[in-house]
Image (cartoon, rainbow, N blue to C red; front, side, top):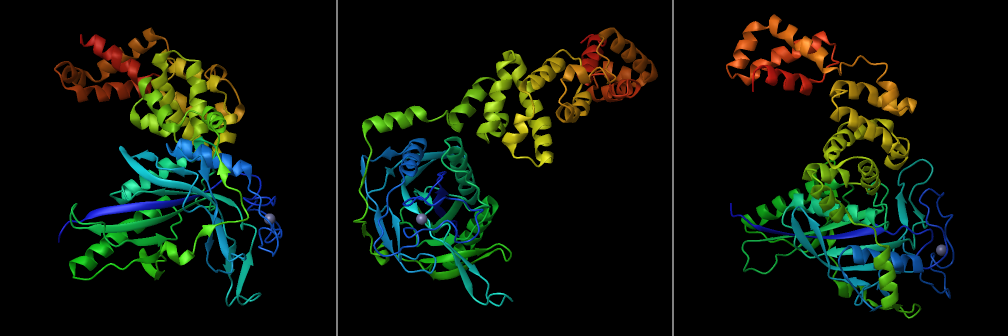
Length: 477
Ligand SMILES: [Zn+2]
């Protein structure tokens, strides 16, 4: 089978974090009962006039800056005409020829994925299909979502694998959450992603015919759907068939994509500038204010953490959420530089494990744990006062009882006096004479028996690292 070049482009919709809708003052609240946040504007009554939401425009500009885009001084809203029951106006207000932001890139998986544009638009309503149900036999429409502000971020087809598509979406989500633009919760629909895939045999050929996949509800589904679609197209081309331009739906339970309809061309939508809305003008002053208001973005935070001595793996986890990175910054403010690595270990292995079990949102959980407590633990670990086992024992208590580690270690059996550990090591050597001989003869592994003997005798209260240090010293290393 010939190998193919893969080209994937993503169209991602993020729901902007505004209190009200894009062109009216109705609340954006997905928890409200159906059809309660609606008005003549968002239900498309005749004679109404839309008024653009300035907050949404500012978020669009801020997003453009976070995405390294060029912010256009002048952009316009256009009507995208199509009929669907969840779109009462029979057109969606979007941006077409002149978007608010163009160009830009996102770094993901060690690569720079170029962006085509980012534009503002409004969302449609929701259809609830209840065909055959006892109460309603048909489809119901809920217009609460109609008019919710969205930003559509379109990438170039620079993505060459399902894994990179996954990484790209993760990076995009992280950026949008850091910059306070969107919650990007895929389950709640505030992050949605369509994926365009084409394959070709070599660089010299133009891009192949693309299929668009919709209906992926998680990062994993995006990866699975892309992998399936690439294989489908490869088989098709290898057997002499042709890929047709179409929209396909991902069915996660079957693990397959299915043809939904032939893909529309832009001309099918008969775009034209919306005569009811003034263009967006972005002044130099506005741009400066937005630039200044942008927080340190995840890429920069990660680099800073790595420069401070953390591994890429650690820096990656700690910058996954802004609240976590901010929390880690509070911890390291109370430590010397040589304590940062241990702090990262405790946060990743102990704190995040507790956070996962707590069922609390991460920010609420972190608010309940004083950064000073973590600093104290780091210092105790550095001084060899507590071993990992003791740390593991007192950690949940520290959170549950809101007690400082220094209070909690009073209750646990800890051998921190080095002379006591020396005695324990001497006993262990006597009890495991042959292992000791082997160890001195250079068999590193032979130390295992001696260390475990000490751990057993001290009931886990000695620090294995200290035991190893003493053992090495005794062996004359
Ligand atoms: Zn409304």
